[in-house]
Image 1 (cartoon, one colour):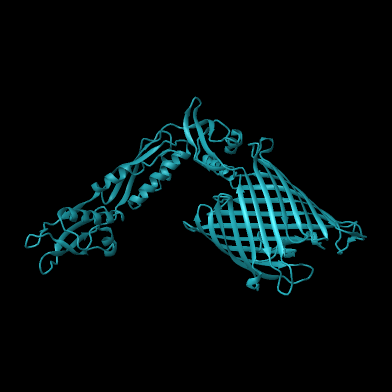
Image 2 (cartoon, helix red, strand yellow):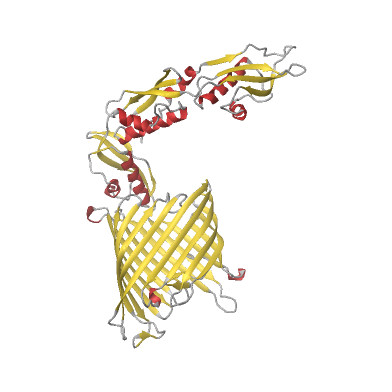
Length: 588
């Protein structure tokens, strides 16, 4: 927000004044024949609080360096600095040459040390406070009477004090150590100077850099009712919401500017590409002993910023096998009626082989509780239609049915990037309940209770700068007295359980996950290896089973977009049955 790196300006200059003594014993810096004296070894005597190894690391002199008055003085300063870092400001260090070589051209340097006792804070005084109560400043500063006088902790205390000033509406505050003096018996008096500056009230906001997105779409994400006292937490959450919209390639931290209303908040953005094309083509060889492999695919288009208003439109077509395919359409209206509520509707229709059609219509109202958390009320109507009707069931013995459910969905998303996350968590849980009714037959008048449970958990861990670990776990369960094929959940394929054919498994309860290790090459390009375990409970008194898939892949950032390819095998598959997927993600 503002440059305020002034915490330690006075602190560093005062520490040398705290030294009780630094002594250099007179010693010859030349050998007997007048040549220069060089160092053989550093030795230490009297040190207990600091090990000889730590002191040796602190000293800049090394074996073979010239021993001059200035180099020895620097070495003594290095040793006393090591003691300062451990709150021993009364340490006395004496340096002398000894242990000369036979030709007197080199010698050891011995440091004799009287460590003294650790210094402690006896009293803390705050000068310059006008608005911030002294008790609040003292609590934020953190250091207390009786604590060791630790330079690092004092620096941290100044930073915490500035943060507290900023939270209280003083973003231009400055703080520094104004003085440190000996109060007797090793108890030091610490004086903290504070210049709070003016209290800042935000009376207006401006946006720069947006060429497509309407300014009101950006400003409404601030959720500020102007005028309002400046709060860095509110400002940070504002930036987080903008970044998670997925509309901008960059969002800068807001800055404060002078305005007729007092102060204003300026946010600068860089427009990103608003639309995404995602295409995947897969090939699964025929299992051993059979002929004819299967081609699968998926084409999806997302428009995330219709007319610059943040409205979203999605269309998707998927092919799961020779006779199975699905279409999906979805629309989202953000901030309906000027409230932090997104209204969404979705339609999907799946043709499963030649046996039935599964048609669904759903609606959701999502309340945006924070930049990361949202809660949705959802409702869905499902209709299963047998392809060929013969009495009450289709040609494959599948009965038609209808179901209506309502429920809640909670989502928590802290990923640092939607395209290639390197850190963060994405969690989603769902609960729906309702009734299901069979069409025709003796059970047509009866309604059965139905319940859906589901969760998705993804965590991204940055191990090193170019190494990311993705761990995920997903689960689905349906509970109803007599589930039909249209009620079952399905997994298998590129988006769920890699190494198997698309939607190869179905059941009343499923669980699957992944452990994926990514090596980022450059930008959004990376190589990866993965292991996907899964569990399937088919229901109908059949036993559940575990299985797994594994493989490798890569995704490359090109002029056409993100191009990906993966090679995967399922449990027990020979290499000849490797499933191959090609994908293209392009923003436009």
